[in-house]
Image (cartoon, rainbow, N blue to C red; front, side):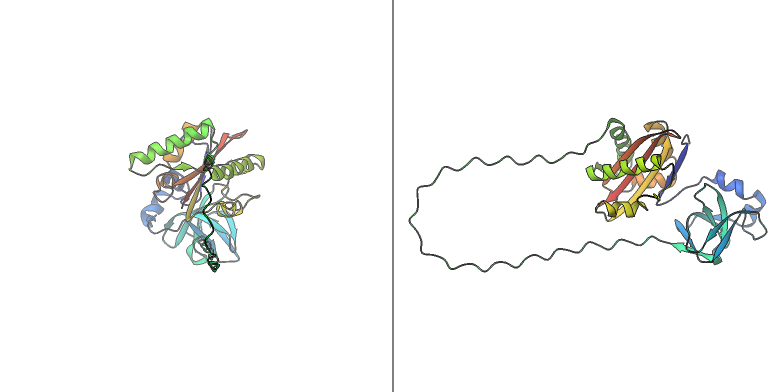
Length: 275
């Protein structure tokens, strides 16, 4: 993978190479590493919880978490969750003090109540029929606003739809408002010098979608830092969780934001929604 730095929201993926730096070969042989029925995130239930380098309280402490803190989960070894921290540290926490966490599903928007039909007025006596006036020419229908999309954003959208075509999934359409939100998120990451799905300005991706009145039934976000569109796309496709977002048939609209970065070369934000 040639990605300098990649994260995503729905299914973060850390390669087994990273896991191997935390666990010894003998330990893996004794306690199998599992990724079956693993939640995407776990929530700490203890007042404080040490992050260990292996599935035992005797292992080295590599970090600490606090009550109600939510972290990405990438696997399980025995009764220990394998977690990925915000600082890119991979460690283990006891499942006795952390539970599976699933983000709440937004409540559907209420359907508007149609106004009552007006009571018809009494029919007046027919008046003499005047000579018909020439019908005015119909006003031209307004042209719908097309998404404003830059060259690099269009290139990334084309690459995504090529991948979806290979697996028989319908192409994504660019949404003008979603494009604006993705661009704002990328600018916020560069301006505030962070690399995370949670923005200090806008909150989580779901908070941001709601703030800008973006409607959706399902949603996800991919973020990446890399030097070019092609390099970022290839790195995202090599990551299982990011690839699932790109090929997800339940998504039909996308917003793409690309902003120059002094750290990564460019920051890429992909926001997917299904309607």
